[in-house]
Image (cartoon, each protein chain N blue to C red):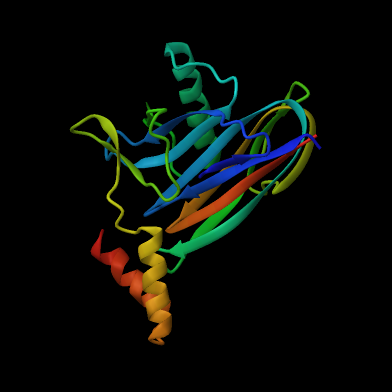
Length: 101
Length: 131
């Protein structure tokens, strides 16, 4: 393994709100994952917080994910990866992590 | 610190926010992280705005129609917990006063727990007050 990098994602909402991070992976082989760290409900009976990988550009292909976002992924020759968190009526915080091979 | 890496290199980070020009509500924040990301110029700004709007079109519950993009100051990167709005009068992106700061919510949850009160009640009251 060549190294690792990671960071935070968070979103506040009184309606719906999202936060995405697109990371340049320099055409490395990448094993990436995301995790939800904490959420606070802001007063609604119904809330939602979801975290995932929404887009991968690797081997010249663009993969867009929706609904059932991957939370762990392995791709060779990866150019960029986009991690995201989306919330409704709550605060949500998560982290993304990329293992570089 | 919102970014960590084993190589110790602090990457360049650019960011932008997608907002509703009718209300100033920011519906999406998008960061771009990389050692070789380009300097901000008109072409790069448009490209980043396209990426952010494409994200909203594909993933957000709010329709992307009519939404606009404002670019954030690369010297003032978002901190964990920051909330943003577009000030329609000043025509700039502003950080919303932290009415629901993570620390505040944690403190009120802890004191409610210590007092044996339901935690949801205190956060519910707080949310209603600030709307």
